Image 1: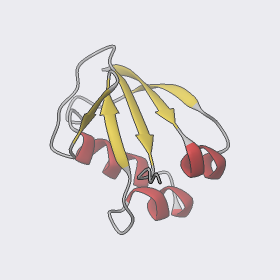
Image 2: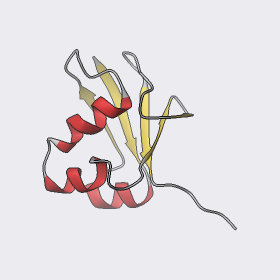
Image 3: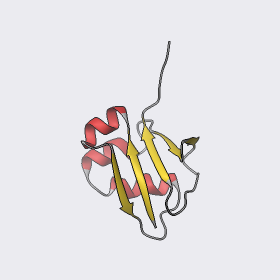
Image 4: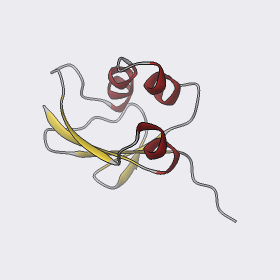
Length: 85
């Protein structure tokens, strides 16, 4: 399954790019599974996506939780929590 992943704010700065198109294994269909798959890329990715820090997700511009699923061609965005004031 092919999706586009977007990275914002601190995450974008750490991984050094803002988007990528990825071909995922068939069993990667949820945000939590995608985060785990990204952790397999190495230590930097583990620090971002291993669950110790908060990373929000959106699918096609809609905020979702880690159990949300996505489909072929979807856009998944990751960003840190946003605070305002």
